[in-house]
Image (cartoon, rainbow over all chains, first blue to last red; front, side):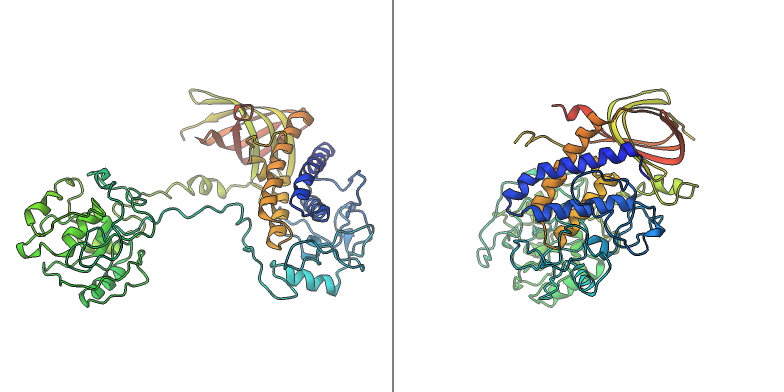
Length: 429
Length: 111
């Protein structure tokens, strides 16, 4: 149960927030009803968490003390909300639908001015309301819980997972954007020649995973310039993918399998591969240019230029692959990566890394948590302190931190502080 | 609008009050009652209000001692994990087995 002081501060914060966003709500044309509903829900949740006490001494009509909620006796006296909410060990237990959406009074529901969506279910309780679960509210709540429009059955325009709208980020450049079709093919020009300026930026060293993406506009297509049709450029696919690609190439099929990360448009094969070494297009991003591929007759084979194009000079328009000697030039800039890996290694290997051994990025993710998980901590809360730091210093193994303006959540309680001095001991055990 | 472009510390959103607000906003956005832009504005305002409230309305000092299990400083945010920590304030002393401390640089706000 929150202390009175904490509760007071929280309530003042809620009031402050609501007051300050009221303007925005009006600007957006949303109206006070929604704002009041927001505040009501927020306070309800706070009460359920025990973060604020039930003595909301303010002038608005609090849902807390109104009406005899059924089963309220099970909770502390102030928690006489609509439905008995047993504050379980789970701190942020999801409230029931009835608590989330205040049951409608018997009057006409207020329509919020949102087009196309029935929001009548969200009513602002005015005065003492009947908070007993009712079929109507249950139906509305039940049907509307998923954000769907209960009347029309339309699914919610917003995704169900929490806060997707807050965390949305545009997807980054597709790392597997085609570099494969980087050769000019005047005969089979599929698309206009894309940028060529980035070719020399390719480092000859070990390719990082992300070196290549973005060199071509996403979705752009580098026309193939060699004789053979390339079907797959790159993908971090599995061996199966590679096999499929290979099969399709060998069969001169035009379609690219869906498993490929790049849906390259089909290039009808013109020249069969004749160098006898199978392509594993997983190698494309494994940066393993095979060093000895240019058989005299293979100057036109796709994978020579293909690989070069892939790795080093995507989109180079003017390569003349008729001359083995010339082509061999492109191998030299890549000494570091010119260690041919057996194809199967990469194909069946770590799919996360295209060209490098596993980065082991996740090795430490659970270390610190696992170490401490099976202690005898409180089962329900991870004690947490959120604050600002003024100074953090260390002398040998002794740390001192000066924090300020923080919220501590310990043993299920919230404590606010203005100043904290923390002394920690670090041990190498 | 005053403070229109101030950066805010979002760390308080992880507190109880912040989580309640986030959940509420989430539900309202999911149900279409509220637009995401407006919800984000509410959260930003919460950041400011919470920061201000802690600064002005709270006057308590706490001491913490414990064993430092992990420390991290990234993007101007310190994260510590203490074990066997003891929190002492004017009234009470509390022991917790493990606590995570997240702290942002206070100087960033006053730019």
